[in-house]
Length: 447
Image (cartoon, rainbow, N blue to C red; front, side):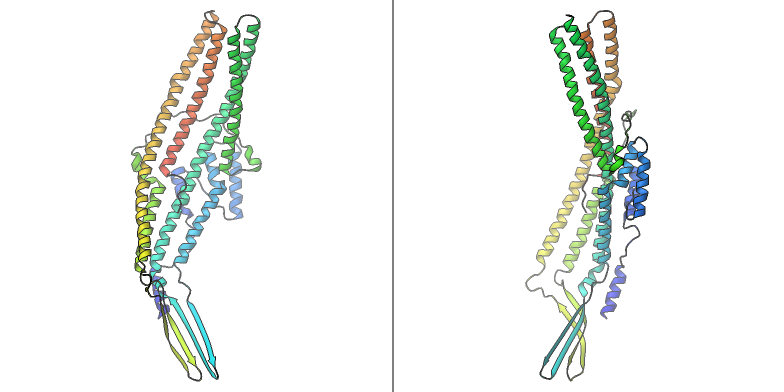
């Protein structure tokens, strides 16, 4: 009878089995839909070999931003470790859908010539009856883990994208400062000669010397930052050995002609952010957990099974054994209260996540728009104006209307404007990457 009950409950609840991909298809689908990229879970030597070949191919030419993201998605070791959470969650789901092992007890006593033997085989009946609900709870958790792992994949892509922008901008700044350093050294040397010839006063010569020293310090800082940014990108792509000698393009992409039109920002955040969807799944899972706690409030341990007793020389006496935990001291009210508190906490977390999602997207959009306007102003107004000023000063210098010192001052201002223009373009692309990341949700969405 007990076996029939177990079989019936198992069939009605559906036996959970291991899937072919352990839920990795969700990660693959989101990577294709949102990034147009491939992902690979390296679980064998063949997988590892194919990824190594693909990475080598991507690194054989100057690394574009799309290829940097693709390499990170294929080769980031932390991301590979995260994929294992899928296997853990699926194993727990399968375990929840399997019949709990029966409990076998045996006792033998003897006194004088008499012998007594008892045995019983019992099954945890409550576990069998609640197995379908437990399976649904673990199923929701598995879906939650899929979203969390996919969110981690999107986080790695966003971080790789920003690391590439910072690394390219840093190397471009170093190259520009090296050229500016050569000009500063030439200006300082010229000022020194002019002072000794009596054509420049000491104060103006010291200004040129200070500019050269300041430029030298900025170049040192820029080189240090370039190494830091490049190493960050290297870590994101999981590179080591000879692969770290990858090449980057000479400069960032040009500023787009117009700002992106993203439509309803908050609506996109509510439907697209994985942390909002994961929080909703968590609430559903806790609601079912609360129901399970209420259902097992009074009877948490109920075991039923066949039993037999034999007292020599009498024949075997057969029957069944029931084991029940009596709710004498603990009526389960504490467990129910705890489950209710956790459920209410989850409801408030969903509301918090939704509010934060809308706010973060609006903030990212504002930063994106401001960064675009600043970079556009440098591209269309400030830098062209600085160029025309330089040309006008050169004409005035050739006409002997201004001296060398005015020309040097203008050169210094051009250097500052050019650096500010490069920084504005870098800030725009970083803000664009932050905006895309805001639509996916923050890092660290734990299952």
